[in-house]
Length: 69
Image (tube, rainbow, N blue to C red; front, top):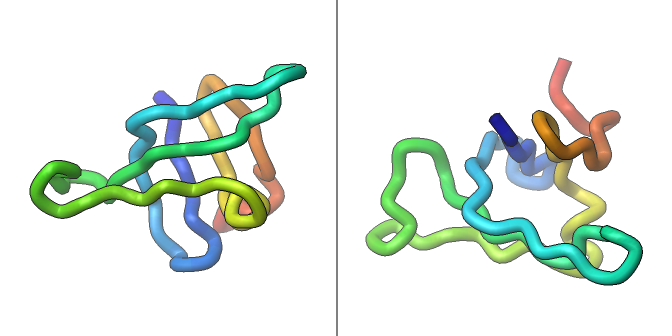
């Protein structure tokens, strides 16, 4: 199970889509809050400099030093 920690907003998010560019680098993430309907409640699009403020754990590892203790 993949989970996303949004360090800027101090909240967990569930991934909807993770987009990879060249060299398998993450270039964009679509995520929503757990137990919310993204169609009704909306979702987050995280890209560019915002990617430095999230951690991804599970099947993918990204900025895991940002995960809460």
